[in-house]
Length: 114
Length: 114
Image (cartoon, rainbow over all chains, first blue to last red; front, top):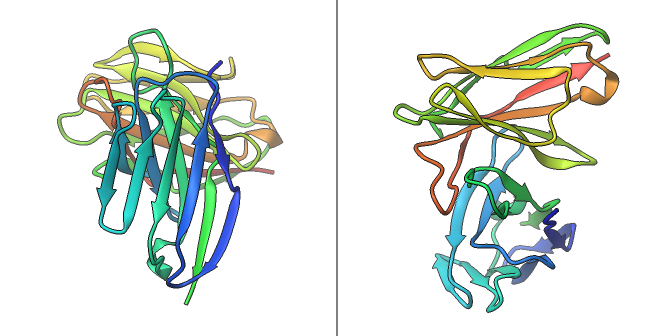
């Protein structure tokens, strides 16, 4: 069974601070995704990283896929209260043909205080 | 708005009862996925349907069943409910389960079993 471990589980910071969330596994993933979920809503896809070593930027968010495709990180620069939410990493299960069968990490609850 | 519609949003029922959760995928999406989100287990894949046929199964209990109808909407049936079944149930859809498994989630159905 492929597992994804996220750290930290909780993050409470002040507006303007930087932060990094980690997603680690002992298994190789063909790709990894990051989702953001707000209370009362479903997860929303932020980014998909596919190539080992890949770095993608989405405004103040920087996503990195490890060279060995076993880990990923999400870095937020100058966090804002609007960044508050649950951040989830997810990867497709190895084998089979259903790439929508995702394994999710436990998530990181981020709270950004004004 | 992801385009995925789930009903009902909230459901309160008693142990031993049976409920049906409904999902309408995004227009044009052929694949529907059901996920369960609980505090202790996180987001867990339950089952996937593609164009009316079961495509993949995850940690779905025998008391649970699902189907996808010709109009592509899907229903998740939960029977002999137990307290531990209380959770958020999400439906997600995609056009085709591609390599990156990009999913669009609905807002979820919150089930409370008393």
